[in-house]
Amino acid sequence: MDNQQMELLISSIVKEVLQQVGGPGGAPTGGGAAQSLAKYIDHTLLKPEATRGDIIKVCDEAKKYNTASVCVNPSWIGLVAKELAGTTVTPCVVVGFPLGATMPDVKAAETKSCIAAGAREIDMVMNIGAAKSGEWDVVLKDIEAVVAAAHPKATVKVILENCLLTDEEIVKACQVCKLAKADFVKTSTGFSTGGATVENIRLMRATVGPNMGVKASGGVRTQDDANAMIGAGASRIGASSSKGIVEGDSSAKRCLNCGNCQKGGTSCPSGVAQLRKSLY
Image 1 (cartoon, one colour):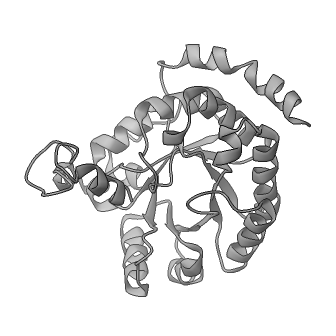
Image 2: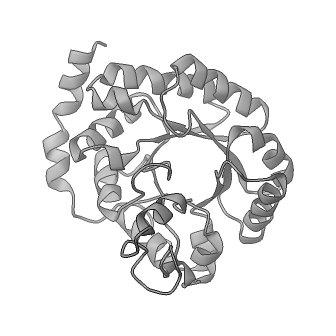
């Protein structure tokens, strides 16, 4: 399928989807219960300075709360698989992270290596530059390479990096993910200019329908945040603040810069930078 055929295929539904957004999300709700919320969470640690001790701590927290998975960088996936052995928590890894700009065969090789080390969920970053260029055939082949390397041993979630895309591009990217037979679409890496929004989750859910996974990641730190995303249609939450989400800790609502105000950090001189650093 060439790019012109791809454009015709996916553009035919864009207007319809954009007009539909605003209704119910279509995903099952967690009801706010701690156990229900925990099963939505990919407990995440992707900071480059994370140590072995940090990774083990995240695994211990995930086992305590019985989260859906632990999501880490590739060099730690073997350790995570070992720490989670015998539990219901799934080892999850990022691929082509955080830019999505590596070659499809490199992403496929990384996927195979991570699965061999114990990964059972793959969160790949799509080729964002190709998407912005309208080269949807390139985006499709990129995702298909990872899906082929992962299935049937591992689930594939595709990170779109919504903060860099228009609504129309988000819809098109979601359609390409469906064509490539990915299992989830995901909002963000947490390393760009913004994280998950309720509006984006509604748009993604309206595009992919009720049977494909939608993951909200980046900036989800409280029960209110998580419930809002689930209500909009998210079926998975990527977060490092699992304790705050499960136990209802409200401290994460404080200013991310000085901790002394309730304005989310954006009113402080370095608040935006702090927000960006703490999305995961």
